Image (cartoon, rainbow over all chains, first blue to last red; front, side, top):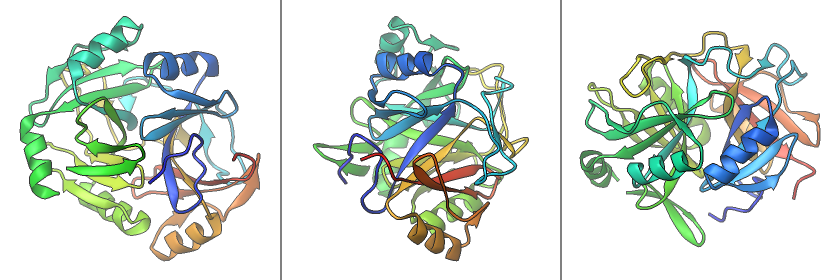
Length: 148
Length: 148
């Protein structure tokens, strides 16, 4: 699979992650400068290529004819979450340090998850979205290897 | 090891270096969601989670969907509770699928049981429609007409 700069598929499809944001410039800074994404289109919507995927940012609003009952808004309650961006990392302490040094806010430092599968910590992006940063343990890696 | 080949390198789950971008959704039933994303989008189920709390993993095109039931708070996010969408019509972030041929995807995915809010509609330089997944999450299906 070739991943072009823009998420425009010539066959099949690409999956991306959309965020409703208050300030596209602030969010761009977070996803480009801190996480190292590549800016593809600056606004309305903003496209940022991030490793194997794309982050798509736009302001809230709606409803629109293609979703007549749905309103897009930034998170109304930061402590009640349904879906989130989940970054699976090779070295969680290195990411925690690098992104923290660049100004990312982490809720806690990396902690072992009781399920034995991973170490985890969470960032808040400029709109308060949680972003999981997780590193699989050897137990999980062995499991993936034996089931692939 | 599960990998997506994106030249010049392949992105792996678990990643051997750097990080891999995935999308997490809180679901009511891991098996139901895994079956839905496998059947509709041709996803590949890597794991269905376990009774100790491990998440389900489904590879979809260039990324991975990680699914688990709600709960929390946990020590690494002591104020955050995960739940399925409280109000499916108030949305902040969502999975955004950029397709090569929206009419083909619309017909194919509908025939596989996907529930579309409307048929594809033209808006803002793209043609778009939305799917509701089993938990009510919206999934944007879009074909760009002005980005190359």
